[in-house]
Image 1: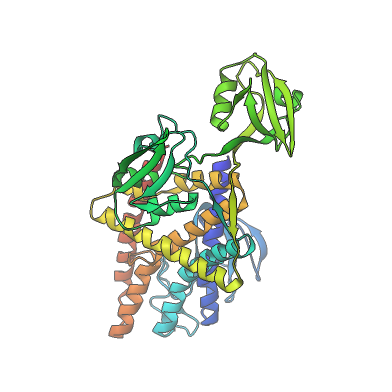
Image 2: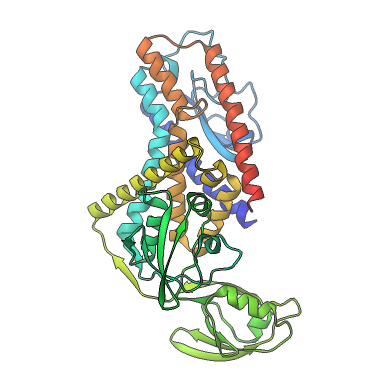
Amino acid sequence: MDYIIYFILTISILVFVHELGHFLAARICKMRTDVFAIGFGKRLFGWNKINGFTLGNLSPEVDLQGHTDYRISMLPLGGYVKIAGMVDESFDTDFANKKPEPYEFRAKPTYQKLFVISAGVLMNLVLTISIFSGINYFQGKQVIKTTTIGVVDEKSLAFDAGFRTGDKIISINDNQISDWQTIFTSLFLDESSATKNIKVQRANSDTSFAIPETVLGKASQESFFLPIGNVKPFISGIIEDSPANDAGIKAGDIFLSINNNELAGSAEVIEIISANSNVELALTILRGKDTVKTAVTPGLDGKIGISIKDNYMGPIEFEEYSLIASISSGLGDMVQYVSVTFEYMGRVFLGKLEVSQAFGGPVKIAQIATESADMGILPYLRFLAVLSLSLAILNILPFPVLDGGHFVIILLEGIFRREIPIKVKIAIQNAGFVILMILTAFILYNDIINL
C-alpha cells in the first residue's frame, strides 16, 4: 500500500505541474481549454462552472460554453489538458471539417503553439530548479564527511562490484574522495570514463579494483547501492502491546549493543533478533544524551515490534548559500543530472547498456519514492526533483505523442506554412502511442522481474 500511495502521490504532483504549464500557456494565448485531467480513462469526479461538482462522466449534451472541466480520472498514470482545435492524445477530430475559431489552437500563430506545447516541460524544469535551490537555501548543502562503507551483504550488488564492509574509499579514477556525496558524483555523474577504478583502504592496506560499466548501470537503478558507514540502528516506531513496548523501548532510541556486542547497523539488529525468538536479549540504548540499559524477549515470530532504520552518527558539515548562490547551485545540479541522463541514453542506443539498467518504470518509481519518503521530506523532495527533470527530458524527445513530437510537427507546419493533414497527424499519433505502450510494457516487465 505504501508503494501504491507514494506512486500515486508522486505521479499526481508531477503530472499536475506539467499539465498546469500547458494550461496556463494556453490561457495566456487565449486558447480554449476544454479539460484539465489528472489521470486517464473514465471521469471519476470533477468541477466546472456550468455543472458545479459532479460524479462520473459528463453528459454528451452538456455545453461548457468555453469553460474548463477540472477532473480526476480512473487511471493515475498521467494526465492531460484538452485544448480546442488540437490533435492530441484524445484523438478528437470533430473540429476538422469546421472553420477554425479564434480561440482554437490551430488558429494561433506558430510561436504561440510552440510556447504552449513547450510549457509543460518548462514547468517541470522550474519545479526541479525550485526544489534544488530551495533545499540549498533553507537547509544548505549537507556534506557527510565520511568515505567509509557500511555493512555490505554478500548477495548485494555492492559486493559484486568489489566493495567490502568497512572499506574506506580513497580515490575514484585517481580523484581523491573526501565525503559521501563525492562518491555518488564520481560513480554516476562523472563522465570521464565508463569503467570506474576504485582505490580503498581495507584492513590497514590499500586495495584497488575496477567497476565495469554494466555493473554501474545496474547500480544506478538502486536507491541505496552503497551502505554508508558510521551508522547505528535508529528506532522510528513502536507497536503497542509488543515486546519492545513492554521493554520500555521508545521511538527515537538508538541501539548501541545487544548482549554487549556493538552494533553496526539495522541489518545486524534484525539478524540477531530473528535468530533469538523467545530468548531474552540485553540492550544498551542511547536516548538523547543518556545511555539506557534494558532487556527484550523477541516473540516466537522473531520480532519485537519496532520500525528500524540506519542513522548516520558521523561528522556532518553544512555549506550555506545566499538566494542567488542557491539558485546557481540548483541550476548546476540540474545540468549535472541532464548530462548524465543523456550519457546513459547514449550508451543504450550504442548497445553498451541494457534498457532495463538505464530506465525505470512505475514499479521502480514507486519503490524509490517510498524508500526516499521513509528517509524524510528532503530526500523525497530531491527524488521528486530528479523525476521531474526526467519527465521533462522524456517529453522533449522528438517522438510522436510526446511534447517533442508535437513541437516538431508544429515547427514543420510553420516553416512550410501548410498544416499537415489531420489523417496524417492521427496516423503519427497512433503509431507513436503503440510504440510507447510497447516500450512502457517492456520497462514495467523489467521492473517486476528485477524486484
